[in-house]
Length: 132
Image (cartoon, rainbow, N blue to C red; front, side, top):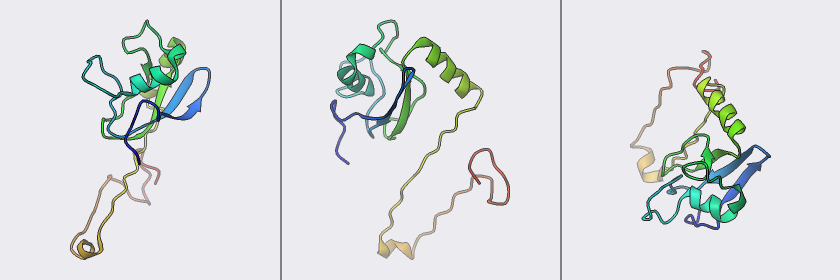
């Protein structure tokens, strides 16, 4: 995947109320400092200057956060009512966020390593944390 730039913003979904973008890895969501050369905020202003809201601190209403090094879908509310609705959904835990990690192992290390993760659930026991 190529490094992020102000031009390569991928739109996943757009409606009257929401914009869902694929946030690039190693891109901050927002920043008020001039040192940050690339942020999602700058990408959005470049692509959709008409959607920037001067009444908000960063110009956009980000519904949630993704870490700097994490890529993935990020939801932006396009108006105050939509932002309130998204906030309530997150607060009431009606939103599910899922992460997919890709791991690569070389042949020479495959016989020497063993990976195990425990989510506190199994396929036989329903768990609110996962889809099992």
